[in-house]
Length: 129
Image (tube, rainbow, N blue to C red; front, side, top):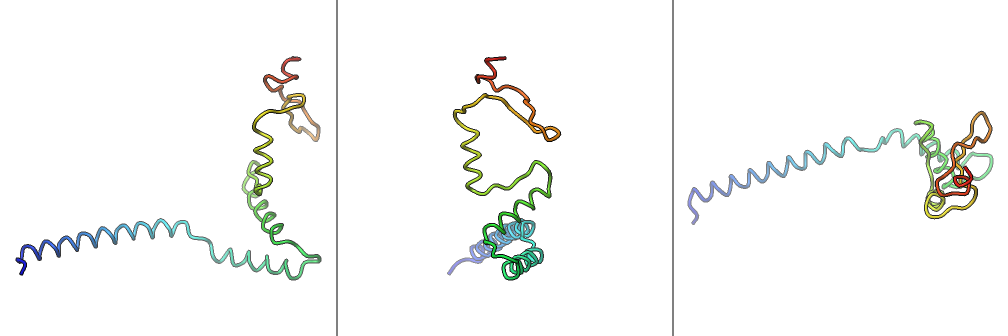
């Protein structure tokens, strides 16, 4: 038989472990509550999605609807945010890495016109001045 002191130690250890585990679970649950999905809003999105799929004038692919919704969501945040699907992102990566050809100028749109902003270093435009 175990002594009373041994039993007390085991019970005390069990209580401490139980408290620590419940605190950890509580902290995890609280963290997950703050990142939960807005179910009601997503339900509305699903209803609109379904309505467009069933009643729109012509058939619309799911991927197109989702991509357009994501594009609109990010455009609504600010003029600098944009959504790119995997193909567009891959094209962007290819266009912004490695070697480039052409004149080597940075351009921007201003009042509906193309404006040369600056030449890019080590390019023909940079060499020409």
